[in-house]
Image 1 (spheres, helix red, strand yellow):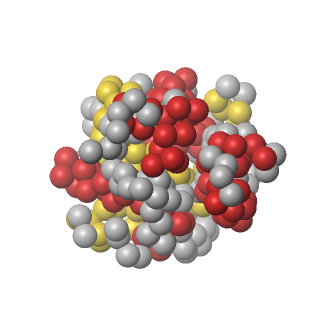
Image 2: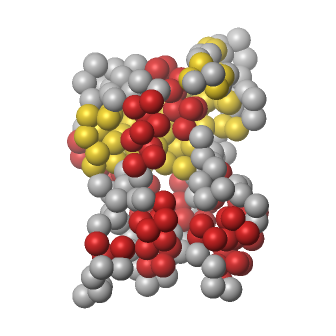
Length: 235
């Protein structure tokens, strides 16, 4: 796990005359976005370039990390990673998010080029405090989907429309997408960003997240293989 990744979330977004507006419309869903600034971000895997974006309608701050040349028209190894404070920064074993973040950054650096979009959509879009409430329900026996629904939310409230202006700004038109989630593949295709191929990212399996992963496979359709669909037992 990488210590200090929460600094991605505390990027100083001082936007002045250098702002670049990147409006777009996706299925009549306008997402006004401001590109704020870019800087180097040294990591244990290599030096990435960090690009800060402001979603004007919500005030949310999103980050893209790029490595190498990504605007050459060729499919780029990439990941859409939704914020997970507990997994990404607090080393939680309740999910696989932190392991996937680290694995994706490592894979991009090894590839020599790639992109990771860090999206401020904590708790599959319900926010940090509601995620803690959902965890409390899970401690009482609910699964991750049931907990969201008992709180009055959908199973997955994330909106990937923000990705299009970010990718367009970076000059990326096609991805080799690191994901187990078919919804991300479909969302990108629907907005005109073809996924050349899907790269599985199955990391961080442990006794604390086995039920969570089984629920993601069984109820949310995540492509996690037979192990997390209850068809085989863990060795």
